[in-house]
Image 1: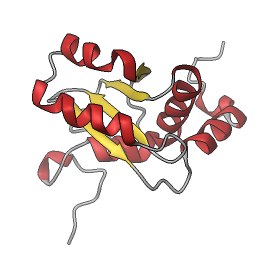
Image 2 (image 1 turned 30 degrees about the horizontal axis):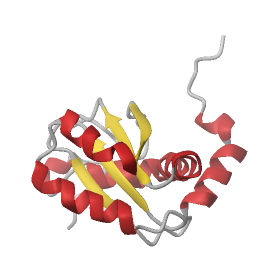
Image 3 (image 1 turned 180 degrees about the vertical axis):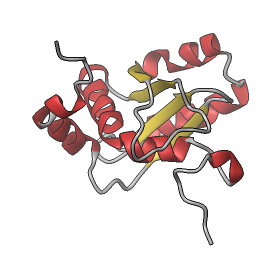
Length: 145
């Protein structure tokens, strides 16, 4: 019997794929808006609050995202202290991805930075951006008076 995704992922995997599964729409939106304003680059997402008690289908996980343009990405990686062995792969991925279909994502959290090239989305980044714009009220987590 397979353990449910809501159970702490340290048992059989990592939290990063579950985070991506739950937050793909804002990640795709950030990637597309970044591409439109800055060209090729990567979405950098800093995640906090990932614990063994996270129920991925229910709990909100605090995170911030920003887009780092290709022209400054290697300098950004150096500032982060990212292993230089990963720079070439990241640079190649950013140079060759299809911004209308893919996302280059750098997740920063409780462990080693997680770099991934997300491809083949059922809802591509331009559509993520459109949907997030149409549904913005659903994503506003500001407490109402």
